[in-house]
Length: 55
Image (cartoon, rainbow, N blue to C red):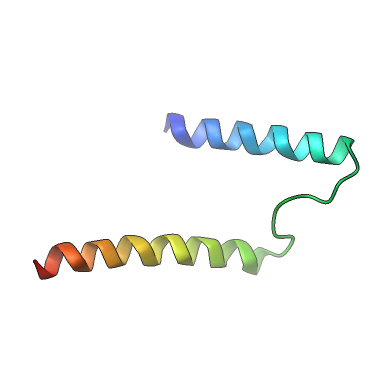
């Protein structure tokens, strides 16, 4: 849980700094892109699970 909170705080700080420096946000602006990132992560988790199951 600590990792999640630290990641959220770091993301908030980066977002605020980028806005103040008038730079584009370094994150996908579309919800579908965020869902794609989750898909890649969970695909890796599933692949790890399958490899452990096959052994």
